[in-house]
Image (cartoon, rainbow, N blue to C red; front, top):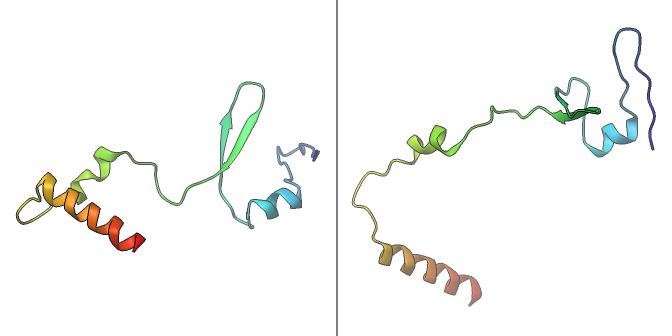
Amino acid sequence: MNITKLSSKGQVIIPKPLRTSHHWEVGQELVVVDVGDGILLKPRMPFNETNISDVAACLKHEGTPKSLDDMDSAIQKGIMDKFQ
């Protein structure tokens, strides 16, 4: 167990073995989550969290749509190519 202290400025030092194992370098931004009886520190993701409706617009397809049979055939071919 690692133990640290809260400074008078509200700062906490994360022990080096934990920083190393999580690959946290100087300047790493952390998200602080209140979990009731404590806090959880998570690395801030480089991109904002999204959902499928946010990114679905980039999935537009131009041309003739593929049929389900075309897709099934392509999947079957991919499987056969991989295992032969």
